Amino acid sequence: MDRLFRPLPLFSDPLDCPSWAVFLDFDGTLVEIADRPEDIVVPAALPVALGALGTAFGGAVAIVSGRTIDVIDGFIGGAVPAVAGLHGWERRDLSGARTHAAAELPNLDHARQHLKSLTEKFPGVLIEDKGASLAIHYRHEPLAAAACHAAAVEVVEAANGALVTLDGKCVVEVKATVADKGAAVRAYLREPPFAGRRPVYIGDDVTDEAGFKAVVAAQGIAVAVGERAADPATAATAYLPDVSAVHAWIGTAARNAHKDSEIGT
Image (cartoon, rainbow, N blue to C red; front, side):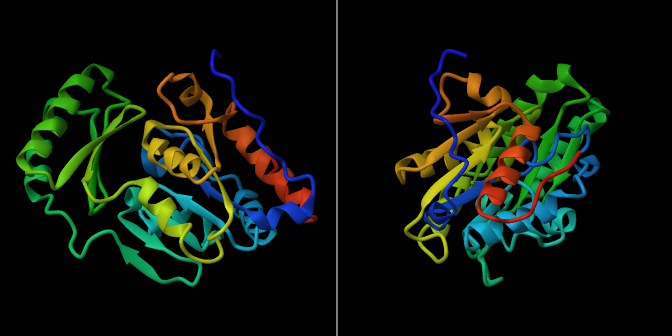
């Protein structure tokens, strides 16, 4: 690896924990990516460890995901109260209050119809309809990548600025222009218990770059997981090799703050 990354703090001094805020991507960061979005496996100890981390950091822990808030809750049982879903389109604060990036959801009816032909031509392509965005997964049809990206661009061009494309690992997403993970991070940093803390953002994909940039601008640490660190264009400043290393960091940070949580295998 050519880039020089800073060490990721493990908060060996418990008194240091209250000065930090932690933002975590979900797929590819907290859980391994699966062939189908619904097939991911959540380690049994992960919700417990996330809860312990939240306690250690005074509640200043948030998940920032492309999935919906309700889907994240279904996977981790509400272990993290603060969740931003749909790349920041929806956001729930520590009190449970929800806000949205705009008053109305983008109209995706034309996009749904246009993208339907992809699944007819490429049976392995999956269109994940999240309500406020559409994710085109081509993990099972790698030769369809160019067609999927072209179709996404066509949908965006027809939306007259209301939608943008967002690339990911074997996926291209069509989402609202007004929402991104960086905006969600900045919103959290304006409110308690996140306000005034130094942020850490951990993510594995190009979709996390907006979050990386937000925490770097706030004098925080942006942590690339796995292959994301190899991209010379990443804004990340620290590195973890894989999901298991993220789990280890969560467990160590929580234990070092005198919390008895550890992610097991």
